Length: 380
Ligand SMILES: Cc1cc2nc3c(=O)[nH]c(=O)nc-3n(C[C@H](O)[C@H](O)[C@H](O)COP(=O)(O)OP(=O)(O)OC[C@H]3O[C@@H](n4cnc5c(N)ncnc54)[C@H](O)[C@@H]3O)c2cc1C
Image (cartoon, rainbow, N blue to C red):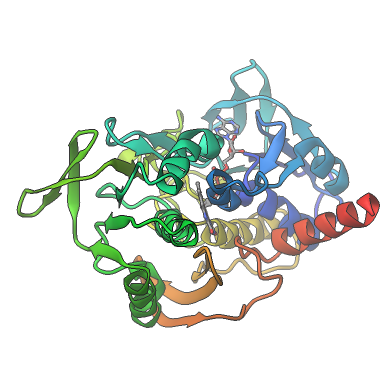
């Protein structure tokens, strides 16, 4: 249905880029040419990195070249540099100029260490950052821990998962710890709506974890936390912080707040023809893999319609799904989101979506599930 000449360039090698590629192949078939630009050798399953400091296996990694071959797309191992939107040319840092009919930017965020005196989570080296801390908890050397988030919340789940898993590990080792979470949210995991948030609050309470909501913190010393409003000073043995997320500030596009890319509900970059964006890089306030995937599906449908496929572009109506690791049984959370807030909230002990993966993505989740099964079969 689509023209052979139509060229789609997708930038990134993460959730949004791969989900969009799979969605486009499903809707448009093998015909339109797709080029994927990414510097990475692997797609890493980021949510599972929270388990690494607890001596579980490393998060799964999938070779991008393998995926590109499988999906019939050209992979260019390079970094995207800037876009000449008028001429419809994407420029790479390696000096390539690539003409496109549709460009999808799925470049994620830049991590910024908001509290230099705290240990800031970075999923590229989670084990290295936190393994020693967990050993100190196990040995009884670190007894008072704080897990804090900056004023602009990054991804919602890892802060709570690390706190709960640390508490469970201390319990298993028979060590007493006191754990505090300080968050700017109105209540724990507020994005998942009232019902789920209240259930998570009970879970934290049962684990003996204190939560300070509506907290705007500073970390003046490595062991000192100041909680605002009120300038309350609290002492801890260790303070672990989420990073602040900054947008990619793409040269050639209108600048959005904090560098995030401003998109329409159809995934189109506002005011720029032929350019789309999806995932953490956009100005949608919730940064989450499942949301990135839904944005990618929306943008893919808009691009497919532009390419002439018989599909109607539809606006983005997000549903947030999350698996909360607790160190014991996981919990499955679901909510519709509007204006950055959750409603019709649900929390269950059994999965309500399939495959029940951490990143709930229409195409990517079953695709990776199939790859995992094939790899497990081959290893037997
Ligand atoms: C510890 C942790 C736990 C999480 N837990 C969950 C969870 O349980 N569930 C969930 O749904 N989400 C979770 N998330 C969030 C989720 O991982 C992100 O929301 C998701 O990865 C965003 O996908 P993305 O494709 O927008 O960006 P990314 O995954 O960041 O991918 C961006 C891609 O763009 C590439 N790139 C960057 N710059 C350039 C450039 N100039 N040129 C070319 N390529 C470039 C990068 O190399 C990367 O491949 C978690 C995140 C972390 C860190």
